[in-house]
Image (cartoon, rainbow, N blue to C red; front, side, top):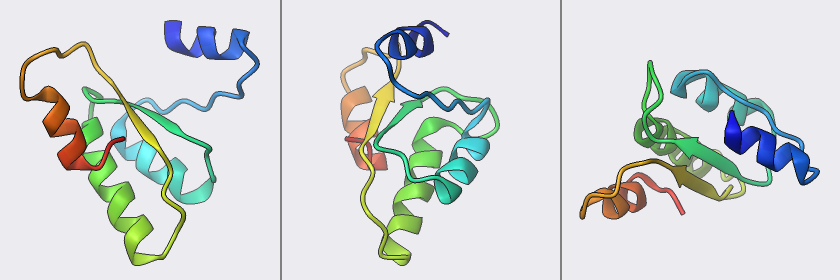
Length: 88
């Protein structure tokens, strides 16, 4: 909620998804300038959702949308896990 409020306050249009599956579906039907992906979403986590979005972009020759990881994780391998999933 906080991130959404901050972005809206700065004039951004914000679309939210309650889980990773919904995020995958929304990115299939709407062209976003970027996606801020929560890594720990229910149903389908942000890493899996990102892999599916990247696969669809590749298969359908779509424009690469920047996907920015949003996570509280700060362990040594977390950055690499995000990059490996296709996050920017």
